[in-house]
Each structure stands twice: as C-alpha cells, then as structure tokens.
Length: 229
Image 1 (spheres, one colour):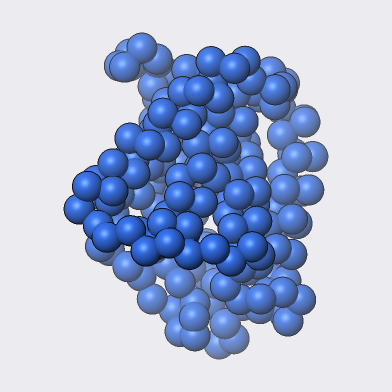
Image 2 (cartoon, rainbow, N blue to C red):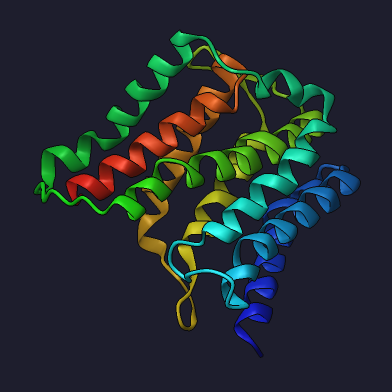
C-alpha cells in the first residue's frame, strides 16, 4: 500500500467513525455521508500534493492552498456559513488573541522559552493552518453538522451541538495521525487538541465568524514556533 493510499484509508476510517456512524444512529445518514466525504476530500487535498512530490512533506504550502481554494468554493455554497466568512469586528479579533494566550498559558508557565526565528516557518504558521483548518473544521464541517443536528445545549454564552464534538474529534485525529514515513497515531495530544478544538468552536459560535478562530489558531502556532514551546 502506498503512503497516499494509507492516508486516504486512514481518513476514510476517521470519517466513518467520527461522522457516518453517529449520523446513522441519529438518523442523519445523508449528513454523515456528506461530512465523511468532505473529510476524505480534505485529506486528499492536504496530503496529495506533498506525497506526489509537489511540496515539502512537513510544511505543505501546496496542500494547504488547495484546501483553501476548494473549501472556499464549498463554503460559498452554504447559505448559513456566508455571514461567518465576512471580516469580524475588532472585538472578535481581541477575543481571538486572548483565547490564544489562554491556550498557551500552560506551556508558558511550565516550559522553557527558546527563541527561534525562521521566516519561512513563521510565515507558514501565520497564515496557512488557521485559514485552511478553520475553514474546513469550524467552517464547512461544523455548518453541515449543525444544520442536521442543531445546537440545543447552552454553555459559556453560546449554543452547542453534536457538530462541535464531532469536528473536534476529527480535528484531533487529523493532527494525531502522521505519515512520516509510516502511518502512526499520537494519543498523547488528545487533551490539548480537544481543548484547542472546543476553544475554536467557541470563537466560531460567539462571533459567527470563521476568521476569529483562524486568527487565534495562527497566533497560537506562531507563538509556539517562535518561543520554542
């Protein structure tokens, strides 16, 4: 089995477990199939160019750019998501930075700062991860699942639904599964990635904006790589 095939098989398994099975149980089979298909498409876009030799395996500009282009088109076709694509108010950006700092607090308090400045590395982290991943997870996938399952639980000032839990689980698995050079899964990041994913969902719900979590995501990543945390 090629690495690319392994990636797609892994993405398919995640998609079935995270999206399809809960949707079938909840009598939302069509939604589950759509979300699962979008998840596999996302994996193909992200890893395809790098595994085919069109970009670096570690920092895949080509894959992320493909992800942004394709999912921007998908997002534009979801009426409930269009307001979230507009530029957010200043309060949303301030909240995004505050959330990023809160997420960084444990590392800042317990870790050792080791300054590092690599322009290409920082430029990637300041743009691609937040824009691409928030567009996919807290944008398209969350909108599709919320449309089907609704948001009936209120906590921390916003309404939540199963979509937040499912996209957070998929987000964690997407970061835990690596293919460099063999397929493996890192369970040690479960708590951190779950908290991160739910925090991004809160920003998305609180400000009805994909850009708020995108800013927090990128600010968090830039701080991690420049401070060596």
